[in-house]
Amino acid sequence: MTFFAPDGGFDFDVVDFVTSDTHFGHARISELAGRPFDAVETMDAELVRRWNDAVAPNAVVLHLGDVALGPIEQSLELTRRLHGRRWLVPGNHDRVSSATQTKRAIERFRPIYEDAGWTVLPELLIGERHGRPLLASHYPYRGDSTETERHGRHRPVDEGLPLIHGHTHARDRGADGRQFHVGVDAFGFAPIPFSVVDAWLDSLERL
Image 1 (cartoon, rainbow, N blue to C red):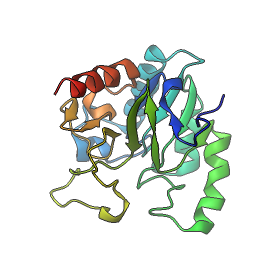
Image 2: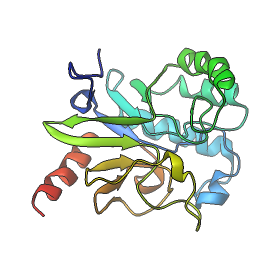
Image 3: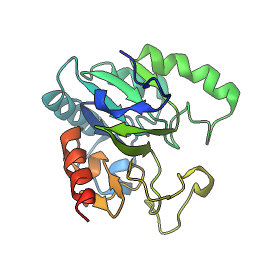
């Protein structure tokens, strides 16, 4: 399956689900993001269960970054159990992010991600969904999980195009003007059908 259209843009039409910020293996994420899990093992098991309840084995899932932390080989090993064809737009915590990692580190870790079943994509996707322009990045135009907005050099430039993103760990679902947060903290700790994004894109056209 190809994920780039003949014109070089990303083909969002082939994507079935989207998500971000699972943070498999991250022992402190429940504390930092207010997740309702008393142990990282409990969180990891529940993330796998909810993912597989939502996603069919052959579905395409676009993950917008921060897949796993902790001892990365062990954390990524957990993701082998996830259903679907899994495509990763790297986030700031991913060891394959050119925004935060050295070229040497990426060369070392990329095979580990690929061996766990991840197809690593560029850090900004520019393409179309049903003929409408759409961007995807780990980073939003604005907003962060802290009071200070970080990674300014790596954020997409807001030129009025719709953007789907992760990073903020916000619990409110989705839309904030022309950006839409798809992270697990906002959507019951599971990937969301891309039809949810389609409905948002429809609403933007009515503005």
